[in-house]
Amino acid sequence: MIPTYSFTAEEIKFLLSQRTIAEKRLLGNVRKLESFPQEVLLVGAYYPGIWLEHNQDNEFLTEYNPEAAWASQELFINKQREDGLLPFCVWTEDPWRVCTGQIQCVRSFVRCALNIAQQTQRPEYDFWQIYNAGCRYEAWLRTNRNRAGTGLVEMYCEYDTGHDHNPRVTDGDIPCSCPEDDAGNMPNLNCMPILSVDLSAMSYDNRLALAELADALGKSSEASLWRSRAAELKEAIQRLLYDPKDDFYYDRGPQGFRRYRTEHLTRLFLNGVTDQDEFDRLYEKWMDDPNEFRTAYPYPAVSISDKHFNWDFPPNCWGSNSQALTAVRALIWLRRFGREKERRNLLMCHLRSALDNGITFPQEINPFTGIPIGNGRDYTPAIILFLEGLKELKKEKDDRVLQR
Image 1 (tube, rainbow, N blue to C red):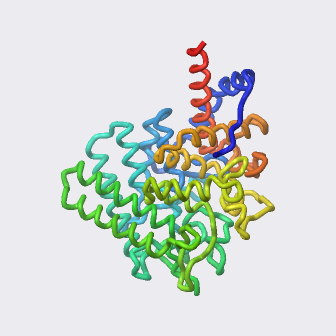
Image 2 (cartoon, rainbow, N blue to C red):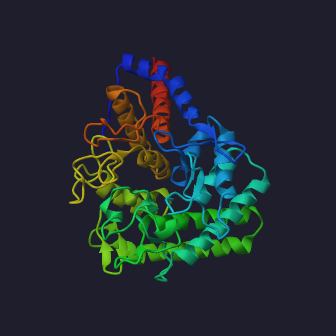
């Protein structure tokens, strides 16, 4: 079980008093970009732009600014490359540019956009936009990230999965971005191509979401095709990337499994690849073990028992630190698999860290002490965690009042 942190009445009162400030910080990250007419949600901290890997942040933004949440989807659709590649980032600083040097997307874009379109009650035209963009993106992945012919999505560079400074995606002289800043280019390395757990999981849920869209848009034959493709991909993930000896999913290169125990396992949960029984087994074995991922302030980017864990805790390190982005994604999959108590406890961990160390909304914290790492402030996922935590606090406070 994730550690439980309690708060005094005075601490609860103070935290709840910060709600308006947190909302202002979140909305302060909603801004206009050059060459796009509407406001969109930026990453915050020191990241100058809107990033595809942060798209799930917009699912939470719908409560505060539904127009910007949807506009953030339209921007990526609008900036999609002719061949179908979605940009991983639209940069706001000089030189302003659309960036396509890596994938950097592990939560299904189609699923996010579909959820947001439903939550904000978009017209049918927008569902067609999502469907067409998703079909083109999946076609790009099949053409450009399937050189081994397995049907799985391949990783070509460090930033493909957003696991900066993690040996899982750097060992073997893997470059930061793809050659010539084009995500379709595979480096000429002995370790390539690498069959990716989390990129494949993202594509799996893309296909399921496209099937749902196809049904809603009256394209039943295409819906069947997308479900069939999703099933084929799930079978390949389980056959080629699951190691029954370790009971873990690993990336695979030409030399075999790449045995790094990182939080990429949770991205299977995020995209619904595991069923409930498998989730329960993997969660309890790995995420709920204090010798693996259940630290005082979960979830570290690498299991603490893995020899690759970076005990120096440098800034922007997915080799050790507990990332706010990981925690925001966990809010989605913990709810999906019925772990409401764990979800609540995770939020309390982040509230305790904020209360003890100053409410600055950092990108990452030390998994053992909760102390912020680096100088990033007003990071969008951290603000979302704070606001979601306040909802839980207020609910519990109201329940206690009613019980008197």
